[in-house]
Length: 266
Image 1 (cartoon, helix red, strand yellow):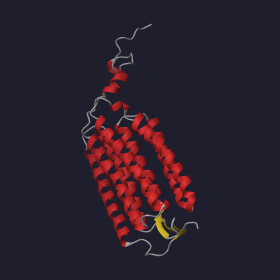
Image 2: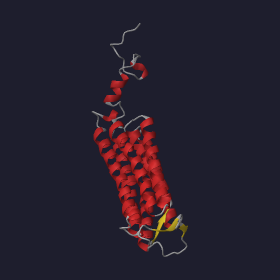
Image 3: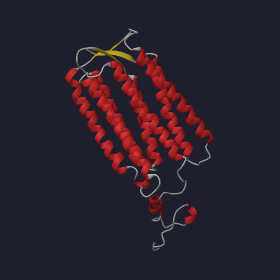
Image 4: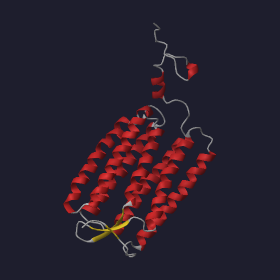
């Protein structure tokens, strides 16, 4: 049975609605905070991270406001044959919010745009596969779930192994390692919730909504708080690895580069 729109107001429990409204208020308050801090910041460069963080929390607040009002609510048949209720919009919120957080972490680590774009692209592919899995019936959900997790594996490699190299030997190394580990663990829990809710039906719709809300808070809200704090305590000078790369340039230091005194002019 395909997903159909639900018009029954009692499909979503009061606890679920209250949870979504509370998360909306949290994201809204945090968005205002990041906006204010970006406008009042005197630390060069930190306002960029606060504006990106405000975008992530702002989108999340908008989507939770819409879901709290019943927008994109659907009723479908679970793996155990029992009717469940959910929201299509939560997949959009998950993609936009987490992708902006990953982008913000990459900017904090002063990483290359290719690695950041690759991570966000793989996350989009993973979320899209989970969304398609939620629209299929029974055993057809498992292949899409496996495809989604397969797209998540190279994302782990990029964030854990390739991104953050410029932070080595700097005061950003520890914050980046924490943020990278935190994001990957939170993203992994999205798969766990999907497996328990959609593949095995071990948790009901109310618990599923609450768990997803909790993970959105952990992934988007907590990560944005940490990035905002770190950005205001990072010196504006070049990182040690950036200085090492810049020293390979033969030009004068007055142009913003460190001269390479071993360079032999032809």
